[in-house]
Image 1 (tube, helix red, strand yellow):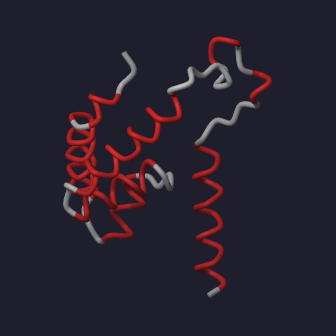
Image 2 (image 1 turned 45 degrees about the vertical axis):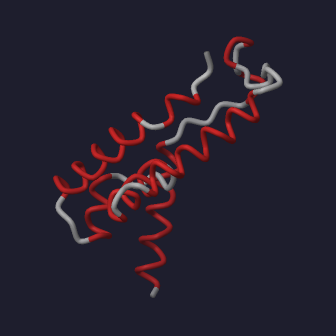
Length: 111
């Protein structure tokens, strides 16, 4: 139990270190998210719904690989180990998911 807990903690630290964090006050005015048009929240909600719908069209393994990589921060090697797949198979699932998702929500992009 101790070893499993230690491995989980180490993995979480590695995932957090992969994401660059920048304080909002350090962003330039052009990059600051505070400058939104009135419809941006509605467009973001529609885009999120389109992303969910596109993900639902994929096989479960593709969904899992995409979500673990993009949302949880796991590497493809870590995902392969967790799912008992080869890294090549994980790469194929990721490529399929990205290709599928990129085709779907284009109707929701700002003009």
